[in-house]
Amino acid sequence: MGSVKYIPPVNMSPEQNLSRYLLEIRKFPMLSFEIEQNLACRWIYGEDYEAAEELVNSHLRLVAKIAMGYRGYGLALAELISEGNIGMMQAVAKFDPAKGFRLSTYAMWWIRASIQEYILRSWSLVKMGTTAAQKKLFFNLRRLKGQMEAYEEGDLSPEHTTAIAERLDVSEKEVISMNRRMSGGDSSLNSRVSMDGDEEWQDWLEDTSQNQEEMMGSFEETMRRRNLLNGAMTSLTERERTILTERRLKTSPATLENLSQSFGISRERVRQIEERAFVKIKKSVKNTLIELSIAS
Image (cartoon, rainbow, N blue to C red; front, top):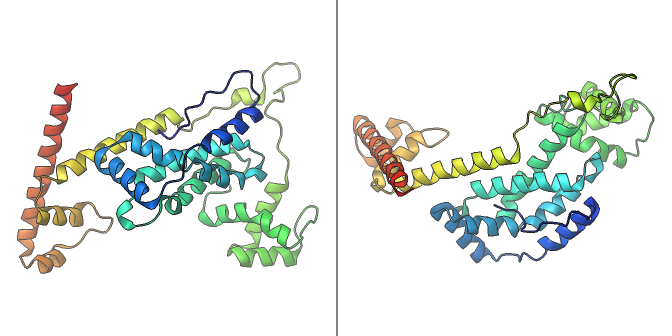
């Protein structure tokens, strides 16, 4: 889902492939609000993968535009776009058209988050960017230094250090440490481990991150479970659906007392309705799984 159906010739360079890709994604039309809402509903409520793919493809230009803003970190633009596309798929999976927002507004956060996480994983100071404040410092330090014309070799001046710390709400010690790490050069992973051997440092590295196939498998499994739940919810009455949602599907569950006052019934009655609705949901999901198993 969400990938351009274009396979570049094997004799094209990476730069030519990227240029061709950027031309290809311009062929996908921008969507009106009404069409976007219709596609989102088809995906969320009908598990229409073609609708989801159309939503992703129509925003590939947005992904490329955002990715270009991160070219100053020494990573290939094609890799940044690829990570941004993953963020775009995650945005489509979690988008709620009922809230009335455009998908592009919602997706920007997911795209940037995916690209920034990739940069932090790929950068030499990956262990440094562990908190929100440190990530903010990492992605803003270079920009602020440029604004202040802080081009000093080595450490920043005390005045610049203090100003940046105040702007980003971090300690001066963190600013100094981050600036030193970002200013230091990295050794090539293609250099040899020893002078008399053929092994390179990259031969000792292990990629433990989840690959895209695993991420897509996890994504599809999440969507399958979500659709099973949505289908099962239709077997409940409106009151059962409301109580079950408020009690078991919210980050901050409602209390029995609050719900009893809302429906004008006792707390024990609310608890009974919740339990009955939960049993009905489990039974409905089980029956659906059995039907799918028989059909396959």
